[in-house]
Image 1 (tube, rainbow, N blue to C red):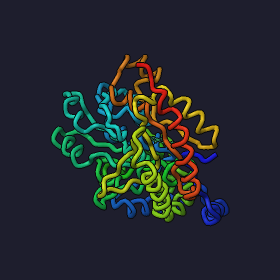
Image 2 (image 1 turned 180 degrees about the vertical axis):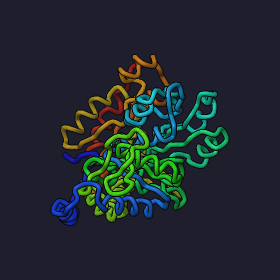
Image 3 (image 1 turned 45 degrees about the horizontal axis):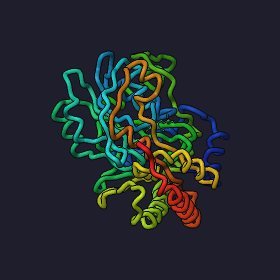
Image 4 (image 1 turned 60 degrees about the horizontal axis):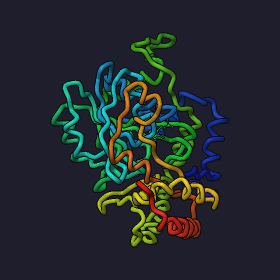
Length: 375
Ligand SMILES: *Cc1c(COP(=O)(O)O)cnc(C)c1O
C-alpha cells in the first residue's frame, strides 16, 4: 500500500532519539528548548512553545487568547475536528464560514459573519496551501479579532517568502506521525507575542514557576502537556530535513499536476506562483457527475494498493456537532466532501510510485466517466 502520507525515519533520527534515551533527562531538559529555538529560526517568529500534540497546543492557544463561554469563533468546517473541539471545550460556539474548492476558508464570507460576540477567526491552511492571509489579517485587525492559524498541514509553507506561522497572532503546528515532520505525537504554538508565550509555558506545565531551590509557585491552572526530550530530539533531526521533504513532495505533486492538467473529470489544488505549499496532501476534486461513483472509485484505488483518504467530513456533520449546534449545511463544504479524494503525496514515494498512482487513478476514473449520477 502506498499511503497518502507517512513518516520518514532514517538512522540519524534513530540515533538522535537513542542518545537522549541514554542521557540524564527524558523530560524537562535542554532538547525541547533547542527544538523551540530552531522552530523560531525556521519560521522567523520570536517564540515557540512545544506541546505533546497539536490538539493540546490548540487548547493552549485558545485559552491564553482568552476564548471563553459565549464567544463566537468564525472558522472552517473543512478540518480535523480538533480545530473546533478545543474552543468548544472552552464554551465557545463555532460559526462556520464556507470554503472554496481549494479547501480553504472563503475569505469573502468572513466579514458578514462577524457579530458583537465574535472573538476570533480560526483558519486552516488546507493540505499546506496558505489561506488568503493578507485579506484575513486585515479583517481581523479592522474588527479587533484574534487570528489563529491551525497550520498543522503547513510547516514550511510560505507566501512571498514569508513562512506560514508568522502571520497570525498564534499559529499551531502538528508533529503527529504523518504531518510534514514528526515527533511521534507533538505540536507547537508559534507567536511573536511574549505574553502569550509566557502564559502558554505555564499552561503546558501545571501553571508552576520555579523560584529558588525547592520553592516553586503555582500562578495559574495548568496541565501536563509537555513534549518529551526524546520526541524533541526527533523533531530537531526531522526539522533539518524538512526542506528536503518538501522538495520531494513538490516533485510528486508537480508530476501529478503535469499528468492531470488536461483532465476534465476533476480539478487539482492550484498553488499560486508566489506561494510554497508544504504539500501535506494532494487533494483532487471530482466533477459533480462523478460524486455518486466516489465510493467505488475509492474502493478500487485501495484494492490497487493506493492508500487514498478523504479530507474532511465537514465538522458540523458529526453527530456531536449536530446535537449540540443543530443541522448546518454550507453548499461548497458539503460539495467538497462529496468530491474530495487525497492521493498519496509523501517524501518516501518515488516518481515511479507517482506514475503508478496517476496511471491507475486515470484508468479507474475514466471507467466511471460515462456513468454519471442521477440527481
Ligand atoms: C492533525 C491535525 C490536528 C491535530 O493534531 P494532533 O497533533 O494529532 O493533535 C489539528 N488540526 C489539523 C488541521 C490537523 O490536521
